[in-house]
Amino acid sequence: MGILSFIFALILQILPLPEQVAAFRPDWVVAVLIYWCMALPHRFSIGTAFICGLLLDLLLGSTLGVRALALSLIAYVTVVNYVRMRNLSLWQQAVVVGVLVVICKSAVFWIEYVLKGVEFPTGYFYPALTTMVIWPWIYLLLRKIRCYFKLE
Image (cartoon, rainbow, N blue to C red; front, side, top):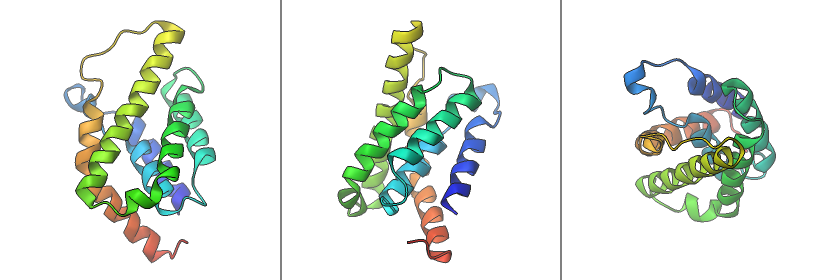
C-alpha cells in the first residue's frame, strides 16, 4: 500500500495546475516519503527515496539524479530522527516537514546551479509552506491507511 501512495504522490506532483497556483504546489513526494520513513523506517528509507527521486527526475525532465540525491538526504535525516519526530505534536511535525522541504529544495537548487547555472526563481520555497499546511491531513490519511491494512 505504501508503494501506491508513492505512485499517487508522483501523479499529484506532475498534475498540471493553473499558472496562478502552480508555484504553490505542495511537495507531495517529500511529504509521503517523510511519513513512511517516520512510520516504517525498516521498510521505507534511503533506497525508496532514491528510486522515487529518479522517477521524479524522469517525470519532470530534469537532470537525472538531482532529486534522487535530495530525497535520499531527506530520508536519511528522517530515518535517523524518526523516534523524535514521532513524539512531536502534529503542528510541530508540520514545522519539521517544512524545514525538510526547504532543505530538499535548497539541495536541488544548489546542484542545478552548479551543473547548469540556473537562476533562483521567485517563490521557490512556496511549496514548503503549502506542504506544512497540508501535513496534518497527509499524516492522518496515511496513518488511517496504514492501520486499515495493518502495515507493520
